[in-house]
Length: 510
Image (cartoon, rainbow, N blue to C red; front, side, top):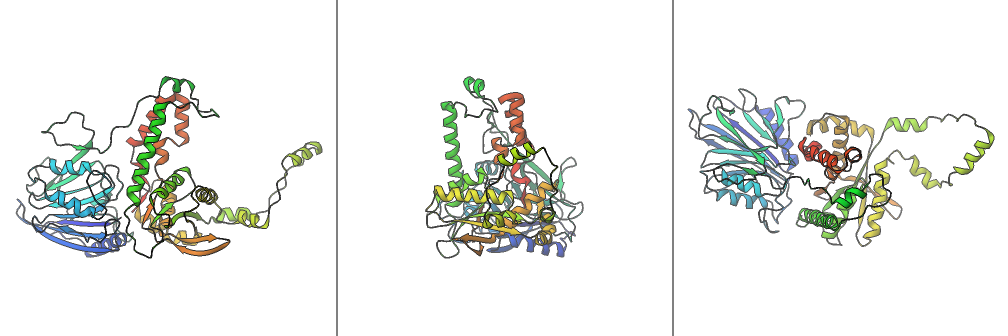
């Protein structure tokens, strides 16, 4: 997670100093390892030159050395600000830096046609946001990946400077002019020609959008930006599976060999995806400390990801499991209220019920645990999940990090979290963003052999299973769709999720 800040100013238009300073500070928090500024005055076809200012911050996640940004090609004077990771499509060795690799490819393109850049970006597998100045063509390119997994906002106010930033301004400054750059394609501001009357314009220059699509009939004369993945599979399962599968079956339905093969292939793809994200993380502290942490609620998604990370990391290296629980004053107050006695029942029925439902004795340790204000459902399932991982991988040190958030601390950070997140449409949006915020700090406690001590995770990479339920049909609405219309209706429901606002960007803090 790096930071990008950019401005385009025409003559007589300047960025407010307070706004620029505020955004520089916020983007630096995203990239503490290196920061840099690069300014250009570009000659244009218009009457006056245009001032371009690039500011980048770097969080070092790939390669043996920190590569400061913005990156400039000294021969072509192209400039790149990159917030992303290349996991496939372009070859990036473990000793390389993906920013350098991408810049080398960009500098070798033919600047006479956009096709070269569009084809190059189409190949990239991984999350990204970027700003790229193509000096020879006098074009500014910027975009987010097609799944919107990296944040990038723009400011397109009339009469003011055009701006891009990985993070929006603080609440004390004007936020109404900012919006998220749509993840629908790659944008280009062409400074080589003035905008025509019917053009979408920025500062008097045309703004073009090359949209992502699944190209079915390649045509060299048509500019295309191909999606780096195929269309959603809509193939129906075999007839025998359709006939025997029932949503309420207590037993596992018969497995078709083709479906069994697909499950194995999915596991291999997911395992390789995890490997790419954990294999080359640089170590900035003493050995045998965690480089990877899992946002861990104890659900099957995060348990699977933790198990896959275990397969690709040295056994000497711990894995941190970050589990968040919030203090809820209303719940605590309800616990302290005396419970009303149930209405009396007939003696025979009362005796029968007491015989059937007599609870097991509760030890003092269990009683203390049950009464703890932080024993939320996710905390309990998280502990159980951590024990399961220790059972299947006993040679690995699994650090179950209990991140307890007092109510006062949650309220103290609430406004800051709201400023950094998008969207804020529901209470659930804020709840998930707050959990991410406190989990990503990695500050909590771990317990070994009955001893609890403070712990702060040194991990730089946090892995989340967010989106698994949407992609794999894990919600009750998917079950209901299957019940109402079998596989056809289920496929429609899963496809509808992908057509709505992207699941990766929906609950992403800035």
